[in-house]
Image 1 (cartoon, one colour):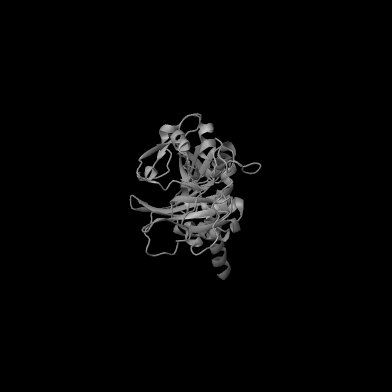
Image 2 (spheres, rainbow, N blue to C red):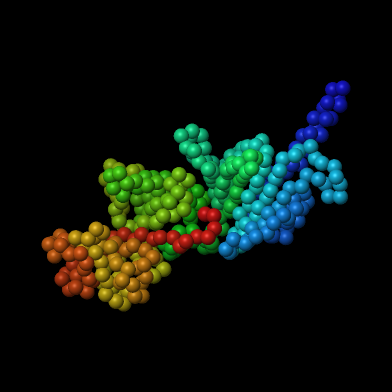
Amino acid sequence: MKKILLLSFCAIVVAMAKGQDLSADKLIDMLSLPAAKAESFLINKKYRPADTESSGDTLIKTYQYNAVSFGSKKKQADTSARQLIRSVLNETFIITYRTTSATEYRKIISDLKKKGFYCEYEKDSTLKLASYLYQHQDHTAEASIRKEEGTAWYSISFFKKILTVTSGLYFAEDLLQFSSHEYLAYYFGEKNVKKDIYYFGANDIAKCSVLFINTKRQVIFIWKDGLNRRKIGNMILGGQHKLKSLEGVDSVNTENSWILKSGLYAGMPLFDLRELNGNNIAFCGGDAPNPGLVLSESTARVDFGNKDVIMGCTNCNDDKFLKSRVMYADKAMKDGKLLFILTIVLYPPVSGVFE
């Protein structure tokens, strides 16, 4: 009798295992499979193409798990419903696995954590979120639970970041592809990236990450999604900024060695900037809300519309500067003003893929 019970138990375990054979490892591996191989793999796992649709430039293909063996009417013991959705945009894949099995969902998350995936706020009971993001190196997994027609669907979306760095980094714009703290730590090493707090004002703060803090290679990343430290709001080069980790530090580096593709760099004298642009440059005076900010109307050979360039000055403490709303490079240099680029703020292009 015990032997029969043991065999029955093993049969149930095997049936459940077959239903759960899209493990965390296999789902992650599928991100790198060509479409034909991915479909062949899924068909072997009893997933059939169910729907194909387009959303803008994104192609979305849905596969439905069928527990009935092909050519047979015999059903598996596991009756959980499952779907796999493969989204493709510009050769970038997002794999979304959906199941009605809470046990399977928890098992995948547990396996992800064993692989090094983490979610800082996972155990914070004060947060009521629609989804939780688990990150590890160049991979992310977004987990959520939603009810559809009374049925709870457990969903995990997997994404692999494709970094286009091949032989080092030279231009500051190249850093815009590192759209999360985890991507920065993965490429540059954890010791070179610090989680920090940026103070815009007394009551205006933001979570940030700082690359090569307090060195000539320092870059501050301000995150749109501060909770997960991802999606770049802007990237700050040069200048002296209020970072929590540098409070009370006597020697703060203000030089910066990053160069933009246009040739701009923090510390560039106004004369060189004027020569590079090939046209006069208008910037905010001391009576404007943002003193030193170069106005976008100055664009000629240099595009000032997709970045903030903020001028500093070593001798602009006179009334003429302090009472001006707008000043111009040619006149300022004629008056002997010693101006230079203090800070450059870069903004990322709009991305069409999961970051």
